[in-house]
Image (cartoon, rainbow, N blue to C red; front, top):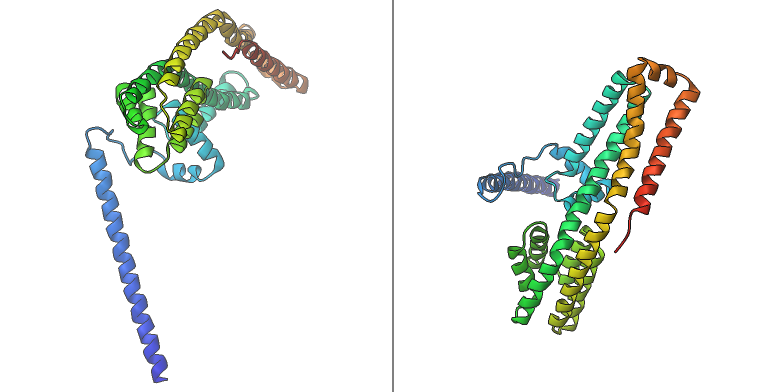
Length: 312
């Protein structure tokens, strides 16, 4: 009994000591984290809201899901200062607001349709912003290739050349190359850093440049001549893309005008005969006609955009 009591007391003391050490470590870590957040908030090169983003708890939960990770990657490609949690809340709030407005101004049947259009519009805006950023990045690729060629010809390593290009180029190329340089600084390989850049901003031109740099890094040879030729090719593709985009601008506008004309017709009809939308959507056939009409407008928009999409 005496030995059992001694072992019990000893185990209790050890558990108590571990508990005290755990509480002390937790308190110390929390204090250090708070001090780090305060230093980052006071830094002149960072915005004052660092570490105090809205909907932080929802954002952490959302990032653990597959949808959240995909949304985070898409937001990173757009360059917007918005977290997945903020985007989710803003989109949900906008959809709810349009639901109420459409139900009050048009008819109750149009509420869910307006909410779906709001969600589609939010993701369409992300795709547009992403494509816009990709276009800007593609326009900077000839200059990027030229800087890398000059730096390589001067005897600089590829890592140093990428860091120098990140400092000299403007956004978005400068920001994206800064991310690549940061990953290289913490131990990532050139293949991983450049591969993530190609996944974040997918384009044929960037894939060619990334492939050239990765192969040159693996082979260990000079890439000056390859980058010189690539610079000239990128300049020619840039001019060709500009001409194609100018020729197809009218078709692109038509794709957006046609659905807007349909919505405007509905609003005009309800303005001329007040309550006509309520009467039309109160029956099954009226609701079916509205759904079919919106579906046809959507198919027309998709087909026009598809036919006007030419990969150069």
